[in-house]
Amino acid sequence: MTKLSRTSLDLKDFGRYINNVWSVFTLLDSKEDVRAFFHSLFTHTEYKMFAKRLEIARRLIEGETYESIARDLKVTEHTIASISNILARDGYGFKIAHQKLQGLDQAHQKKREQRQDYLERKRWPKFREQILVEGLVKAGTAKVSSLLRKRTRQSTARKQLSV
Image 1 (cartoon, rainbow, N blue to C red):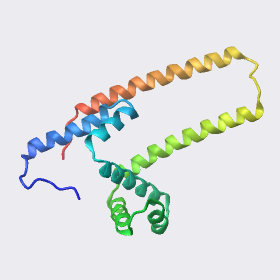
Image 2: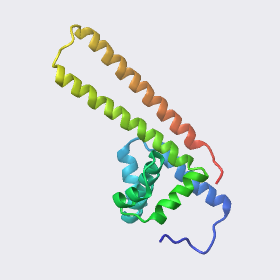
Image 3: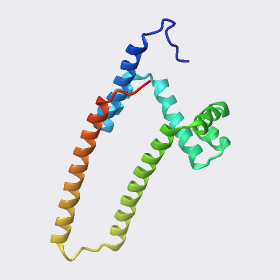
């Protein structure tokens, strides 16, 4: 069980510390950066605990039963109930994370289906120039999107949020 010091911090300082944590999360650019930060910040047990809590929330949102979640993730029904209570109260953070991961899963599934479709058809397009232009447009759009996301992360990291 995680323990907190009995001596309390000044609320102003504590608010600044919390804002620093939020800023770090918005400024990290890649999955590798986030992974390295998590490994530095959390113990192995805390790391597993956070991963399980997120998965419990996702499965509850998907409508899975307590029994199947407990069996698959090796957690108690009490743990599942506490996450369920968070989702019932508000759970906005879990819900938005689930939506983003669901979008990522759908994008991966679409790519797998496109690859499979291509392999099954074994066809080559007639107009290679068209494919080249489409590839360039996609690459340019991806780069612009990446730059916009980076600027958004930087601007939101500067915002001071209330604790």
